[in-house]
Image (cartoon, rainbow, N blue to C red; front, side, top):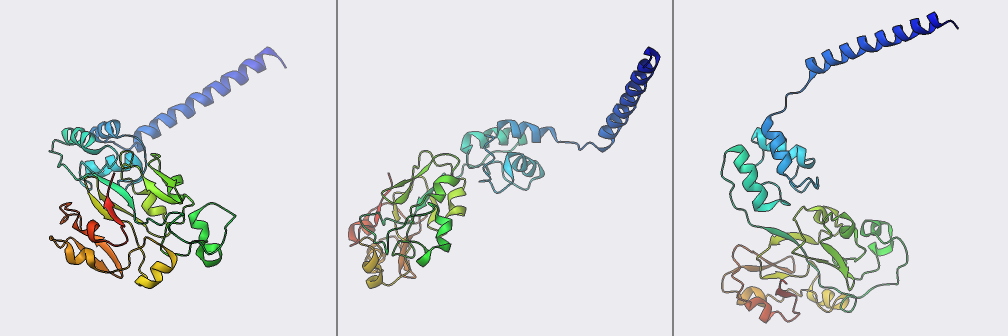
Length: 266
C-alpha cells in the first residue's frame, strides 16, 4: 500500500471522528438534564452509604426528593442530626430534631431457653427456612431462627448472632431498616435509642403453648399491663407490647413480669 493511501485513510478516519464528536457534543447539550445546584450540594453532605434506609433509591434519590420538597431535610437516618443541619442550611430551612431510632429484636429465646424440634444441618439462612420441614428446627414458630439473614443485610455491622438469636448493637445501628425488611419472622422493630424497657418476645401462642417450647416467652399473664402506672404496656394477641411514647422507664412492668422478658436496653 502506498503512503498516499495510508495518509488518505488517516484523514478519512480523523475527519469521521471529528464529525461524530461534533454531533455527540451537540446532542449532549441539547438533551442534557439540568440538575439543581442544591441537589449536588446535598449529595455532597449525605453519608453516601446508599443503604435505602431513607425510603429512596440511594443518596442521590433522597437528595432529589429533598430539593423537590418530597422529603424532609432530616430524612437520612444514617447522617442523623449533624447531616440534617447541613442539609437544612443548604435548603434554607431549620432541621427539626427527630428522635433517634434503633432496631430491636423481639426474642429472648436463646439456645438455652428455647427448644428445637430437630438438629439442623444445611443452608444457614433464615429466608431458606421456608423450604425446610416445620419452617426450621426451632420449636417456637415466632422465635428468632438465628441463621443471620439480618446480619448479612446490615451494612453497618450492627447486628450479630449471640447464643442463637440476633442482637443489635444500638451504638452501631443507623436505623436503615435493612434488618427489618429481611427478617422473615418480622421480629425486628424500631424503638427510640433512649428507650429503657422493651418486650423481648413476639409469640402469639397461649401461655401453656409458649411454655412448652420456650422458658422465657410471654405467657400473656397481663401482670405488666395491670401494674403499669402510665398505661404504656398492653397485651394484644397474647403478647405484651410497650408504647414507648407513654413509657417513663419506671420498671414496674419488668419487676412484675414472671418470665423476665421485659428488660432495660444496654
